[in-house]
Length: 143
Image (tube, rainbow, N blue to C red):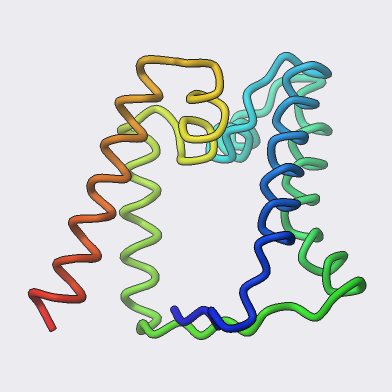
């Protein structure tokens, strides 16, 4: 993936981070739920009564928000330098990791760290470390 660093805008990144934090806080206050995307999506696989609406609304917001942003500003150009097969394998590995780690990066990294959860601190350190090692290996050793 290539990001145009010449046109990097830290203000939009800061605003995006603030909106993610605000959404996590509002979900916690309004529903008493942690904004972990894998848990929210996974809850739709075995829905309980009165639990589907907010989950669908949250996921719809994730899907529709880039389109809303595109109405206000041009979307950044993204180029993915990987094959479709590699993306599928990577997605499956991430999915397996979220099950094994009892949560995803958003649940542990954003919400868990802000609550000072020891389990989330360990999980975040593990997936960040694994990411660093994987990128180093793919970019420098396997190339």
